[in-house]
Amino acid sequence: MKVTISDEELVDHKVSEVHLQRAVDSIHNDGYVVLENVVPHHKLDILRQKMLEDLQTLVSAKEKVMPINFVKGHIQQDAPPYAPYIFRELVANPFVTQVTHKVLGDGVYNSYFSGNTNLPGSGTQPVHVDTGQLWQNLRVAHPVFSLVVNVAPLEVNEENGSVELWPGSHSDISVSRYDDIKVDLKRVKARRDFAPPVRGNTKKGAVLIRDKRLWHRGMPNYSNTPRQMVAMVHYVSWYRTSTKLQFEKGCESAFENEYLDSNAEFIDEPIDYIFRNHPYDYNEESNQVYDE
Image (cartoon, rainbow, N blue to C red; front, side, top):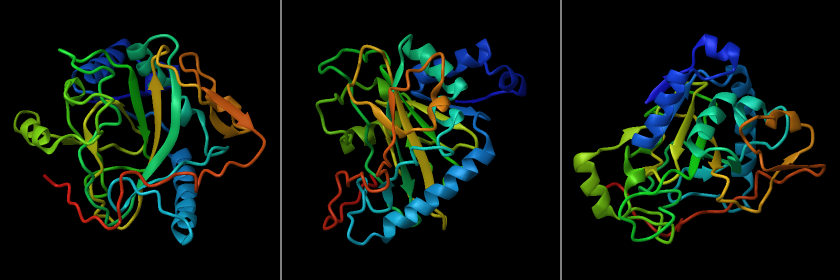
């Protein structure tokens, strides 16, 4: 479901009760929602340009191992952790946090700040989850405990590799956090028959919020330009990690928010955000195809 934030809501910095309930219902029922019209385009343009420059630095470093996720063309790429590329509408968006707070309750905090870039000519990832159900042998799925927040600095569609989403799959109890995050192909084929996937297309300025358990996969980028995506993960207060997220001093004000604990620390030293990621489940010698 898509929820378009109105001009009146933008002025008030507040999601209407109707829109808030629609967003929450969509997350509970389908496992995701798209909030449109919540991030200023000019700030996204600045971020995209910098990420393109960083991408060139990353791919040009021949002595470094490319941080590929599953298949060629899908790489882990962090956004710059300093101003002006860190801004409120990205890291503490008031509309996003009203939704995640409504779903997760008081004490919601952010545990993650990274991203991915889908390069032209990329392949198809396996259907996977970012995490499975917290417990094994459940009879029904437990409530939402974490939400992934994705912000793309450009319009995303089938042409440039929008993510494939499997509505309702967050309630599937077959995958727990103790299992391989790749979903068994037999289960994928069976689910396709009654609940086929959709594409997570987003307009520029939109944010995709999804249950971390939702089945999804990166798809090929048929365009001639990279498609970037910034990722954060909001958690319930009782599922706490001890790791603080590091940002450079000077962007502290961007994290001010009444609903979200930024879980951040601000340091004086430069942060090596370009080369700190590593390949995930990728073997260059393997020619495995994940299209089922």
